[in-house]
Picture 1 (cartoon, rainbow, N blue to C red):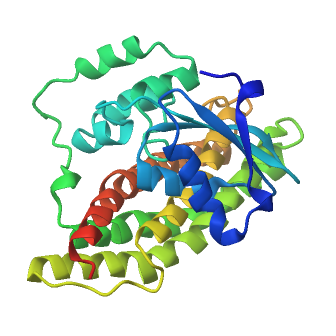
Picture 2 (cartoon, one colour; picture 1 turned 180 degrees about the vertical axis):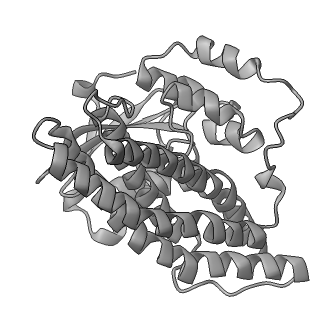
Length: 319
């Protein structure tokens, strides 16, 4: 692959807004496997990442060279086509594999579109080791895990709202209270707790604006698509153009919340308790881990099962 110094640079700041994404796609489509180019922009082009992923698939790498505040530069490199499954697809088929990924700190929800090799390379982990543990899982599912991928999409959307959204709304006030309290009481000796409280506030704010958008806009449209499919009918194009657009936004917000949780885990050394931890300190860390586990499955159900199926369904029933 060419080095960064020899890559062509596309300065999208000089393009008309309506021509920016089409021009980037034109450049990308002209690449051969292993080739790349640099995008030069005046804002974070992350929405492009999700559009490219949605329309071209997991066939590229995305590497920030510069991240603001005035200039953003990203190297996009086209990968060789592969039939290897993504991490999200592996977990969607057998949720028990999530425990292996969790053990190695591999994100199977927000980062679920990566291949195992890509994820391991980013973490500095030998993929053979992870593959061996995944292969050691028995072929037959004897754990009783729910096979979410076979669920009706309307039922799955309702399940996410009634189980995961409900849990988040109930857990957030308690965790905000606990994280704020231990930061106040123990922050002098454990300054990382102040940052933990700030990160959790960011998560709370993100989810409290995120969940209503799913419940009022995205999920109702998914149910409309599902009902039309079952009746053999067609639906009009929605005001937002395509379901890919709100899904891109939801996945960006998922990634933001996942990043905040990853920061909390790093700050707390995987929720390790110090010797002077009081009862509230212990409960707060236990609840944070519980919250993380629930949010990971919550995002997995959406990113790796509900959203891909909804995108495919829209193609079938849209007029």
